[in-house]
Image (cartoon, rainbow, N blue to C red; front, side):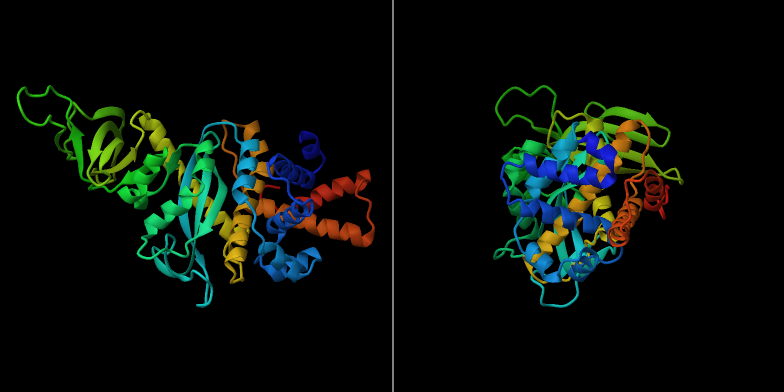
Length: 413
């Protein structure tokens, strides 16, 4: 693969995509990888909205061809898992988060009012639930698969729906990681307990006023009666030193670690309590937890803080790869478009960002989707010029000019 990367950026992307298809257990019709690669490159190249008409304009193929292909089922979980396995060798964890998708009208299946984190309120549209893999070493996220919030069963709560849909893929997910990170909304027993019973460990955050109890560690009283389990409610203004261990302290931050019982989750949890001091010298706290009682406190914090990378996936996909742009009303087409949009981000990171990051692992290397889109758009135009004007791209004088053309308009050029 390294030889193809040295040849050109496009051959690098093509080599990665086709290598992933070759490593997938299910052998597909040879036309599928070619069409899939074409669509991926269009998602990485088209500036502006990405819909069926735009795909026709920039490819030379008719709009109906893309509509037909988007209606087909495709195993994004297996494809993205293969891509990630090829590129990520270090410690990983799973992350789950729904995202609001703008959609007007009332005829699209699943349309309704859903929570929008950006707006801070419920908005009309659709909801896409994404599962991502967090690369702990590189501190980034890769999309794995996603599904639409639709067809809830009679009297089924939203949390139960999320659990049911994720559990359909639990065998594949457990092969990637047994740790699942979710935000504070999911720190409910109806979400946590099913995953713990299935072999996962949840990492999340509790409410600041969570009802927690110390686990009694002293000597039990002799005689009749039930053994003492707990030693009172945890008051965060006055933590008991015999239970809460101070593991880190700087001028404006103190971190405590302890095992406690959560009344709401109905289980013992591994707590990390972070106290921070504001400008007014007042202390406030946040409560993070893991269902793995043996997990180190700094790993719990690291995993939860890394969770926000899935939000960056949605942000970049909405800004650059058309996550909000699908005009179809078919649930199959919508599902394909959303997963393709986020898979295009995976490919951009693997082909363009990871090689640079691995060269300087201890330095901050910015992932600029704007630059990647600009470069791919320039390459799309350049190939059009070459084919129409009969330019020989292999001439030495043309190679230098082509390189300058590809970097035209990039922020980091």
